[in-house]
Image (cartoon, rainbow, N blue to C red; front, side, top):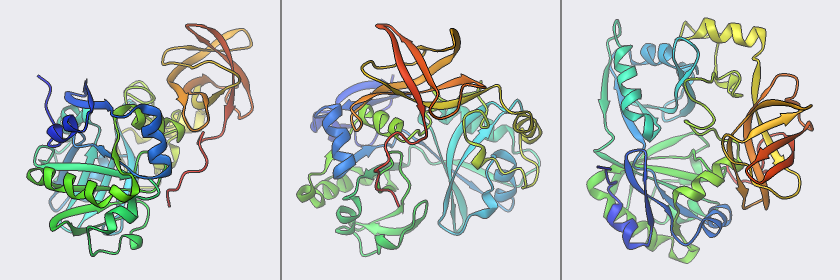
Length: 364
């Protein structure tokens, strides 16, 4: 039986078309994918992301534990700052990609919904020797992502906090519509936007207040469909598609969040060897020349041979053409390289482009 988020009734009331996703009943779309996508690019939209896993890590050695657990440098965080990081197996394969926030008395970790149980089990397996406590806060909290160039204007109506002062990947503790919450500025769309975390029992109140405040700006709920096209236009990896236990951060283009200079961490030596020897393949962005829409598992071709497979593919509402990500064999990964993708409707011409696909996003 799929779980329901605290906003389930509100989403059904708003006309959400519901599907099973990551163990939850979630909305794939409301007014339609294209319209929802453009609403976020041009105005403001609201995503129910309460299905994401939320975990507190606290204790005298919380920092040392997280430093060992993930590839990025958690010690670099200022108070109320966030970082993005992979968490790896000893093999170098990716357990998950996560956000870690530094808060006054604990670290707050946000993980992918489908991986929540697996991630927490993995974290608990690694605690031996560390004086830490891991607390699952997923069900106790609700989470909304308010995304788009008008998101600050809408949220500012509900709080006395100066939202303009929050930098990218920063946050603050405040009240919104009288409810205490944590508000951060990250996002998975490329647009300016905020995430708000608050007690699950306040879900209906916050939903109503948010939509009242955003009425003038045309605020609307956004489903999983547009969430996927928005993130793909930015080359944001999706766990289970673009990264998983069979991929490593180096080949996935995530070397920038693997900090070899910090103390030892899981898979450090394996990843360092991959970096020094260069990976046998890399994740690239592929833009269709002409018509055609690539889909996951479509074969990527070059010089008469199979070079890899598409991991994510869609029609880009912003660019009005097919786009894809996929792993391509070393030697064929430079921008400007012309390749082909074998789709179910035949071969289509593609060219490797520098990310992101969409370059007009509003994030700070």
